[in-house]
Length: 316
Image (cartoon, rainbow, N blue to C red; front, side, top):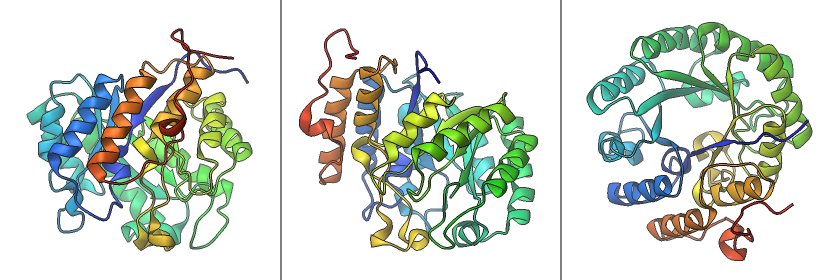
């Protein structure tokens, strides 16, 4: 497998990063970080979640955050847990503009995890997703669907590969434009990450593959690298490595398990000669801004070591 020339990065700090954060981050802080990330070269953001505020107060400012990005030229992705959320995404796109590009929703390969997360069996959830995809497409939105717990589940342990790909095939049949085989709880390894994405590329050639790995056990970036070599064209990452599965589902050390750090991911790719369109030096400064907004230490390694890149970029 050879490395691609370019890879896209989706900055997930504002949504997947903050979904388990213990305090509500002020809207102006979120917007400052996102706009700085866009100025550094980020061209897609996982901006917010369209969940009722009573369930997720962190995202009560969804409209304001999206409105503040409307003039940036960025592509915005939003999470919608149900048909009502998708309809809200369509309304926001009509109101604020086509920069709201993608709506996403997860379904766990582990049915017990799916029940804990969205209170639905696989059959119930796939029926609902069919309506959600149809509504999104009718409203001009692309659809990204994550097969969560694809590499293992904290509730039941091992998850059968056949179940993962049966669900993925059904999602593609329903019209998913983009697909994640998500390592929700950091149980993947590079061998399986590469094999799963190779299989997905072969079985679903018209669907964009997005690498989404949490760094719970320190292998997140290695797994993302393997996925890119196998055909993923976009990587999800979060400034400072914050985020992770909510404690209500994860059931371990408060659930704050961490996404892969955007700063480290971009530096790895650029050092390998894979272009991201992002300025590593500026991105490191954005990571420092994000840490100040949260008043919390960063998990990014390059925040402490520097990026080590020449002005020309790659060092092999």
